[in-house]
Image 1 (cartoon, one colour):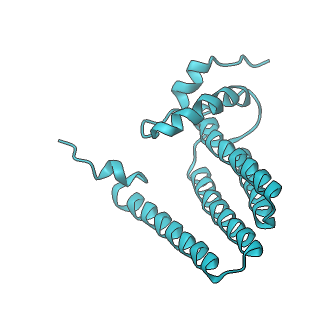
Image 2 (cartoon, rainbow, N blue to C red):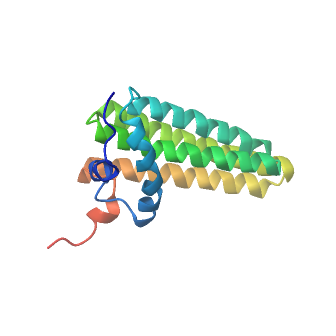
Length: 171
């Protein structure tokens, strides 16, 4: 049997220096789970696909519009997000990062977020069919796609997705 790594070793291996403050709260839980996953045959891309599928299930629940389904959608969305964090942790710990894995992770993130936005918009609209709701949903989608475009542009120009750090003064 493969020896279970120490939690501190997992945290040191997977933490990114640019993690924002709230990400550290998520990582308190995700690294505990990742610790058990890294000793299995599960690959980061498997977790990415699972995260995406669970997020799509969340989007479907949101689209139903009933309160209990909104709760199910929120739970599925949060679970998908936790898995999305863990896929990178697994890849970094196992030293199995790849360009394809980065592409798969980023692509599924974008599509999952779009699906959730469409699901939420449709769910609200089905209960309250006003044009204003569709306009707000469309504005969110346009804003999100613009943000994704800026991240890609920043990656190409600065070699980093975190353009806030790149714009800081470095003497």
